[in-house]
Length: 137
Image 1 (cartoon, rainbow, N blue to C red):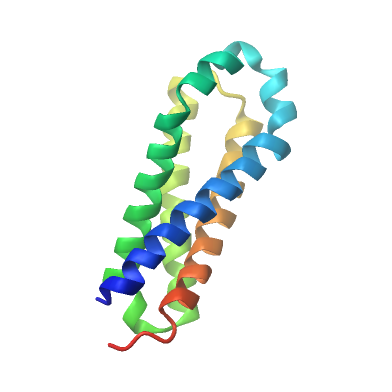
Image 2 (cartoon, one colour):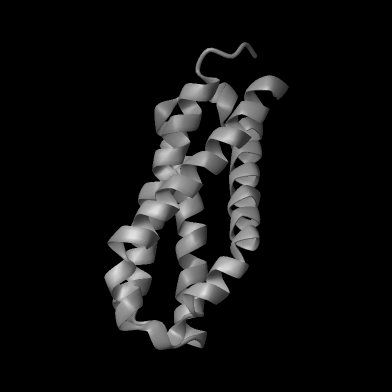
């Protein structure tokens, strides 16, 4: 595993997740969240907890990047990269399905989370394939 590329991948993964989460949740899903506001914390409460949000995004990005570096990077295959992203999305969607059973989330919201998460994970795997593309084994 190329340590320099892995560190770069961790930073890139966090940045990608942060930006795409902002677009997904801040714009695309904002009307859905507004329509279901009784399920969520107030804006002030969420702002107070933003460091935890960034921490969670960083954990996901670092874990994704290290798993990618360990198991996928040296294969140098876009198909393998995309499969990795898809399997990460399956893991994510499985968790969202469980949350749908235990929390009063609307089914259409959970479906949108899964759709966005799948695009996000496959997109991230493609970006990481570029980060590791020219690294030496």
